[in-house]
Each structure stands twice: as structure tokens, then as C-alpha cells.
Length: 432
Image (cartoon, rainbow, N blue to C red):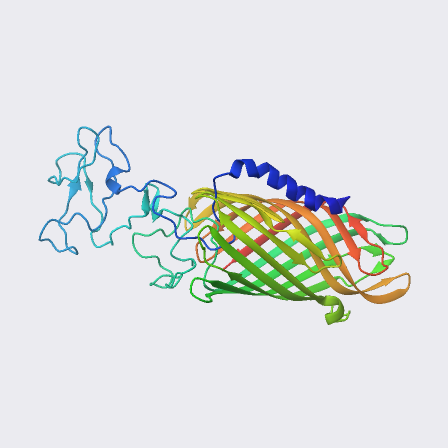
């Protein structure tokens, strides 16, 4: 019954979102493309952001544009502005103290780019909030950390609606800790009994770099630890399981509306008792074609190969919507909906809900009915979680909790598998 859920969920997801997506698009999990100015908002200048009905409005002028003739740009005179009767904000100099006025910003700041928008509640940002100075895009030849060791140039966004960043060049550490409390197991007579609790730690050391002009190569060293506390009964396997992997991902630049992502992941998954290469070696692969439908929607069509007890070829496909505040990743095998909540001190806050189809497998030494042998064991489940992410640019952290269900454990030999009851799952993570 459960094996039929994968194609059904994929089909329902596509049928649900396809009518909404016609004619609209954006990006997920791929390098952001350079976009025309005003693609998210109409291009505007500081003098036309608001119309003043009464008095004056504290809106900074475009820096570097208001120095009087013959005045050095780095030492301009004090200048202020007052709203005209019709509510416009003309570039008119008036004497200080002659009414409600505002003072122009520091003239030493660089002129704002034409494709920037002004936000009354945060520093100015790019018209595409996903193209931030600390992050890389295909074809970019500049350092992703900026010219001042991670400090964005003056006049550019430091924090704000940055979105889920696609890639960052250089090294990055990722640490996740997960916990699923003990739940009852059910199995054939003579098989597993009792409860099973799972504690996990995942660590990744990732490195992103330009590969050839316009392309990006991501190389990730992976380590995972699982403690399976249980089950009891007639099945005996090790409680401590380990995974060592390398993930290589290649991203092409956008050619028209199209771009491609390819990845391969060899790994060793073992309890250090079974034969490591025969039972513990796995080789996964994936590939997807992204097609940008318009500035908000992107269509992704691809597939993944998972080397497990039951080898799987599953769809990696769906639709992605993104604007200044929302990101809808309506994908399979993992979907996520995120919303930007605003800024808190040095962090941008994101609230999200995600759903995931998850399978992991290990080479183990198992004992059943007095017979010990090397085999593979896999755990398959579905997860739905809600979380909060705090993004500080060069580092971020999150915590999330939810429900894990349809949990099955399967062996490659004659050892009988078993089911684990539905229950809570909690995770915390740090990126730096």
C-alpha cells in the first residue's frame, strides 16, 4: 500500500499547482539569474517613493546626486528638502530652519544602483532580494564575501528579505541534531518487539567555487551518526550506525529560461561489523532541468536514483514560486513553503513548513533465529515539520518540529522487517 504513495503524491502535487503556475516562475535550489531592474518592483528613486499629503516625508535623496555646482562631492554643503504643495518632493534647496525639513544623506556614499529599491524600514536592497552581495551567482567574477571581508558596500543591503540563498562560495559548516522518541514496533511473531528511539547527528563541510566561467561546483564532505535504541525480540543489530559521504554538485548558468543541476553522492553506510564495501557502499545520483516561466515561477523536471535495499528512481520535480516575502518550493521528494517575517537584531526571520519523503540504509550484521549474517537494512518514512530560521548572512540557525509517519524497516535478507509507530520528530541546526 505504501509503495503506491510516492507516484500518487507526486501526481497530486503537480495537478494541484500546475493550473496556478501557468505563466509564472522563479528559482529554487539553483543559481539565481541576473534579472532586469524592476522585475520585483517598479524602479523608483528616493524622491518618488511616497507622495506627501501633509508636510514633508523623511526620504533620503539618491546619494551623490545633490552636490551644488563647483562643490566637491566629498564635502557637500548641508542641504534639506521640503514637500511641494501638490505633494511632490522636488529637488529644491531651502535654508535650514525654515519649516519641516529633512537632511540629505552622507554625500560620500556611492550612488544607488538603478536596479535598487528603497525600503523605509531597512537599508536599500537589490530589486531581486535573492541577489545579495555575500552570495554567488553564475557568471559572477567577484568575491562572494564582498571587497571588505564580508561587509557589503555602503548603500547595499546588509540584512533583510534575503530569501533562501542558493550558494555561497568558500567553506561552510552545517550541523544538524535530530531526535525521534521511542515508539512501539510491530512485526511478525518471533520478530522485533518493544520500542525504538532514534537519535541522530549530521555534519557537513561544504565548499563552493566557480568551475568554468558561469558554472558552479559544490563539493560536500558528509558524516552522520545514528543511535537506534531498540528494538528487542528476535532481531539483533548494532545500535550505532555511521555514514561517510561525498556529494559533488554541478550547476550550469542560465541559458535563456533553462538551467541544469547534476549531482552524484558515493557513501559508506555501516555499523563497522558487516563488510563495508559489499553491504555499506551506496551510490546516489540526481539531475534536474529548471525552466523559468516568468519572474515568479520556475518549473523543475528531473529524477533521483537512491541506492538502498530497494533501489529507487523517484521524480525530482515540481514548481517553485518566489517573491520578496514568499518562497513556495512545491517539489518532490521535499516541499517547503517559507515566509519572511522581518528583521530581529542581526538576523532575518523566516517561518516555514516542509514535507519530506525520507529513506536511509546501512550495511549491518544481523542475527535472527540464531543465524548471523551481513545484510542491508533501510528505514523509510514521511515527515511534516514546521520551523523558524534566523539568518545572519554568514551564519544561520533553525529549529523545527513535526510528525513522522508510515515508518517501515526492511532487511535485504530473510530477516523479517517491522513497522514503527507514528510519532514526534524534532531537529535543530546551525550553518556557519
